[in-house]
Image (cartoon, rainbow, N blue to C red; front, side, top):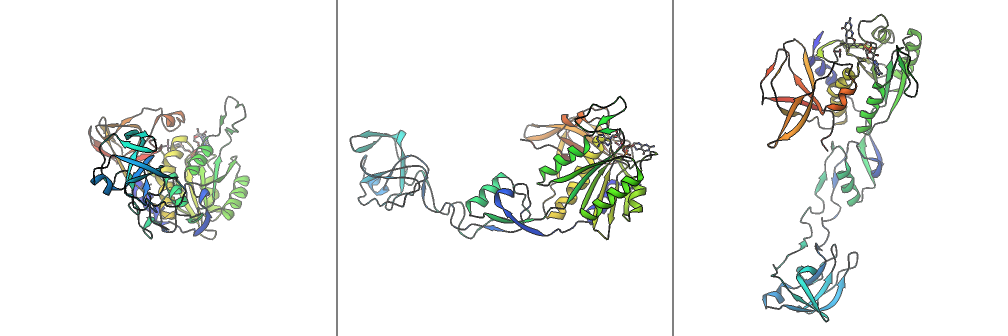
Length: 398
Ligand SMILES: Nc1nc2c(c(=O)[nH]1)N[C@H]1C(S)=C(S)[C@@H](COP(=O)(O)OP(=O)(O)OC[C@H]3O[C@@H](n4cnc5c(N)ncnc54)[C@H](O)[C@@H]3O)O[C@H]1N2
Ligand code: MOO
């Protein structure tokens, strides 16, 4: 058995490059950007009004003017007007171009309409209520860099600069395969000795968060079927995420079958809990990576987060952020295993504080709904209340 640190090092050593592809920007959500995105024009591209009201010249204000004749309306989406006489005003809408010779906007709430004029009710600061051209970014500035995970915010930027197509990293082709005779379909009524499949659907959900779709299969504990079906998937896919069938049971055939199929074992069994019987290997001819996770739901879930996700991020050139939390109560690990303890987190005095959530163990699938992530405890580690601990989030905080 190897340590968790060594196992992770082995996995990360095998980062891959699946290349890049161009996709419509609206389909780029959750993908990893593979190019720099530049400002195609100044942001904002012109001096834009930030209020509905009137545009005036500060020259008139400095001359003590308090009442302005209305000579036009500047609408958002209309070409720039010209304030020909500096003592007049132009009505202006939020988002409209500030007229030539005007440099100050006063909102309607600070004005009173008198005939065809507006009268000032409040003090005015020259230059107010204008979002100045290029004050956010100048044309040519780098707005997004390669390696950024595209979220809704980045989609907005891509749209704003006219990037209707964008270069992203190609995701690996993944099959999620669960194994086990005790597992029945979600829409079936299990017999007393059966349970419904859940792991593959959880993993499929996790992959969706990465902008990935995966084929999901279930295989029964039959050596011939396992061999045939896994051989097909190894040929077709870049990654197989397996769950179940990797520990010491009489029907835990996967290590034997994977070996028979020519998958080179990198390691089997890690000094960690949960997730100890993890089997990791590579089929070098087909360049397929096999993450064979133990079948207990929490074990599969933990191992997806601590191995597969960092491998995927490294492979795609995305960041692998490191998080820490403060412990609400002390935590002790008297074993020689790396422990992942499910916790709930909350902000307290500006820091993220983690509180352990008791579960019945790695078979407690419902327990996963009560946690925000896992705190990582090194072997023989004693962490006092208030200590900073590594944290693997499994849920976003919003
Ligand atoms: N003699 C030993 N027994 C066990 C060891 C060991 O070291 N020596 N390790 C234990 C640990 S730790 C784990 S974790 C489990 C993992 O075993 P397997 O990977 O072989 O998984 P299975 O036996 O197939 O299943 C374990 C458990 O999880 C349920 N399961 C499996 N797949 C799914 C699924 N897709 N959805 C929902 N639930 C699933 C399965 O029914 C079992 O209850 O082994 C220990 N034993
Ligand atoms: O991975 Mo197992 O969960 O340590 O019981």
